[in-house]
Image 1 (cartoon, rainbow, N blue to C red):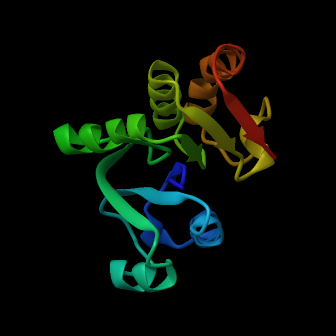
Image 2 (image 1 turned 180 degrees about the vertical axis):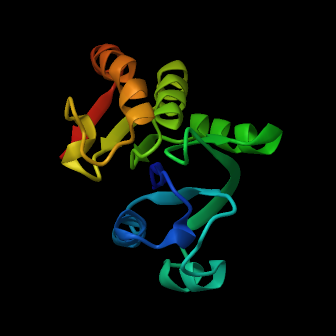
Length: 168
């Protein structure tokens, strides 16, 4: 029997190795027997805590890691795919059955939701911090709060129009 394909998107470079990154690794390792899993992680120059080899030793051999080039914008609050290779890698999600996204980039989330809608891929929106959707967020910069206003309206539109599951 063919296993369903699951793409897990992390909003920051896995090598940052914070709580969200550790949670994504743990989830991938727990689900790898039931799903064909690919971890999508942006790769950019930043202050990184660990190297690729360290990360790859923590992840089950059944889990594939796809590093795509990205750039940080808006005072390092959001990421977008960089160049043709970054966009090409993001478009691979059309071949998956499910996409699970740890949101930390408003722009990337919108891109993923749009691609999932076009290609009829089930989208799972994982909340790393409940503060993410508050009207006045304590963890977001003023620019990010500005970006979140239209995003919240779009979020409810996409929830009504596509197969999106929100996890808290």
